[in-house]
Length: 215
Image (cartoon, helix red, strand yellow):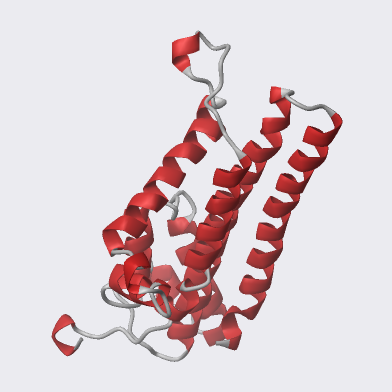
């Protein structure tokens, strides 16, 4: 799936930046032990991780939409205005269609499991079943996760990111003085989970769209 190569490289670079923020936390902790301000490096890493996932999902949607429009492959639930469909030049029409998909998705946070499924369902059936199957490949039976467990983990990450990005990570029970705790282990675990989930998405979004009865 060469068409996703640039998006994958950009995502990997973005995730590397999240890891660098964790390294910054380590450096700060060595210079000034027990300074709670050090934790802000972890908060930055957390937000960077989620933003990287959203960026990647948006790019995959555009790339796959353009690929399918150009090759007359099936999609569903993608509405294009008449002024796009009637563009006579094929390349201009495909570019305008891809731009329309970008604009339609621009306000959506794909770290929300329902929004992610909504986007992927334009290109494949049962996206969360496919994600779950791929994530469980080669995993010991005792460590297998259901789709609901994976979605639950993603929801908790989404909620935590919103606490940091939209609420300054303030714990309201402390009258705006105390912050919600954050630690390195949880942050690194979040980065790893998001990365493992994200790298499955190109394989899922590229699946042929079939009728449910053909599955």
